[in-house]
Picture 1 (tube, rainbow, N blue to C red):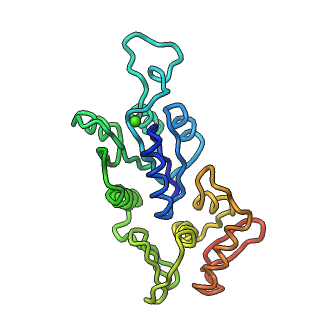
Picture 2 (picture 1 turned 180 degrees about the horizontal axis):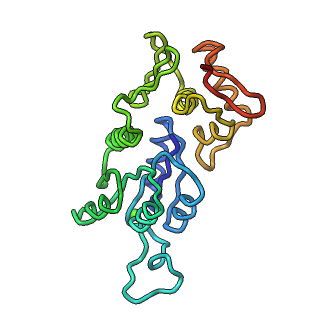
Picture 3 (picture 1 turned 45 degrees about the horizontal axis):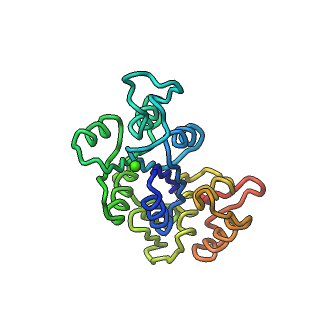
Length: 233
Ligand code: CA
């Protein structure tokens, strides 16, 4: 999954990014309100992790300080997202323990919230739950021609036999199985593999597809030359 992490605390941000990458997600990380606004306006994410206390927004996003205006923070980012009918799932991360902030977060359209400090394992479980709910699937597993992929447990099986995949092989297969019938470009698949600041090897996607074909059969993933990859029906 492609996640956006909005967090100004360097230690928390680095820790979360590392843990979520290990979990197989592509993580982009921004640290203030202005960067969060710009990124959410131009890119698509599967889920946003949003800190509430953030610098760099200015009051209401305006350049001039208006007396009495509240500084823009994570809640502002969330409200703006929902105001333009963007339904990207959002989990609010807050150090504030005032119940009022949690209620405001949920009222502003957050899908869930976590109060810092929290365990990374709990965050991962909340992410899985929110993504499951958001996908609207009562049965979270994806299936295609005898291959079953469970995004929650990260298990893949073929005709009932477990298939062992690396985190990145899993990410490529998950992207393809989420949109059966679609042709995904190399760039779309690379987006699922990497966050910003990570070197993208030019042949990475074809290497992972090659591995997946070796494990699942040569006729499982097709290649439309110059266009992208798709699941063979
Ligand atoms: Ca903060």
